Image (tube, rainbow, N blue to C red; front, top):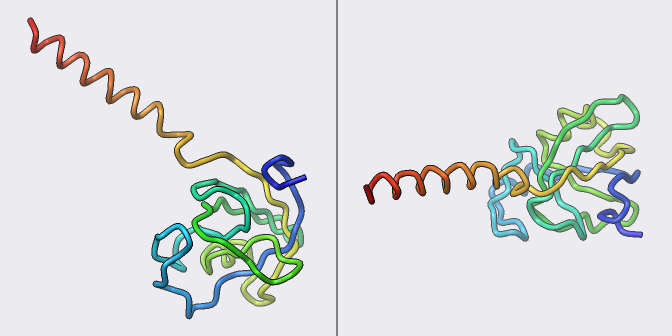
Length: 128
């Protein structure tokens, strides 16, 4: 069963070192250690994931924009900011629960629909 099929799974999180800041991710974006992003081996880019540190209960929502981690036993590689919010900077790794929330675009259709309605209304007004 894949993570996408499970929707919620347990794993181990690690985080990117400072040396990766500014490098291109697999999605083509530049990695910014101050943003709430993460790497996962199989989830689509743009997938939002709620990551909960099982050791302290703290949670953070991240967006997948890279591939990895490539170290056996690790499920997700977090930005430094996400790791800070989870309280795992000291140890570097933490047991986590991953809950898939959906894709970034999942929130966009209502904005797109509103824009389309406004444009249609303007067209109707222009016709009369």
